[in-house]
Amino acid sequence: MAAVPVVVFSDFTCPFSYVTEAALWRLEDEGLAAPAYVAFELHPVPTPLPVDPDAEWPDALHDMARDAGVELRTPAPPARTRKAHEAAKLAQERGVGRAMRAAIFAAAFRDGRDVGRIDVLVELAVGLGLDESEAKAVLDVDGFTAAVERDEALARRAGVEATPALIVGTGSGAETMLGAHGMDALREALERAARPGG
Image: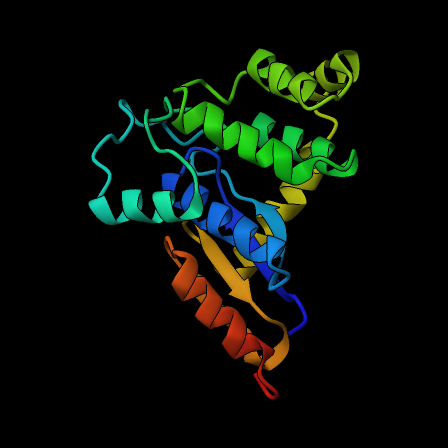
């Protein structure tokens, strides 16, 4: 079966996005999924930030995280994620996009760090071998802001209002999946999309 295209609308302060992306990474490694990531800020300016992070994650989410091989330990502090999405786009251009996404999510949900901060993002980028000066300069001058805004316009056109949202497959047979999904549900959706006429 050829890898099935999956458009992924997600945000770095959404634990449901994290577990769903992590499951997709494993399915990508199996050659089943070809994810493409679309930035979606849960709390863009001027939307107020939540006062406190949500620490009451359902047991099912912890189960999905364990199955996907990631750890949900500490709630991410409420943060604006525009810069995190920009950092992910820079990393994608430099060939380490997935690794950067994993690093940002881990910083938020394993380490409880503020992934809206440029210094945190630069540190993560450097840890993946990216140039510190370039990463800081790109984030300081909003080098990928236009790309993030194009993603968010795409989300609006697609009617996406929350994360994660997936479009599995292409054409008239594409399936939209909302909310967190584990390995089994994603595998089944990929298999449906790969069938002739799917």
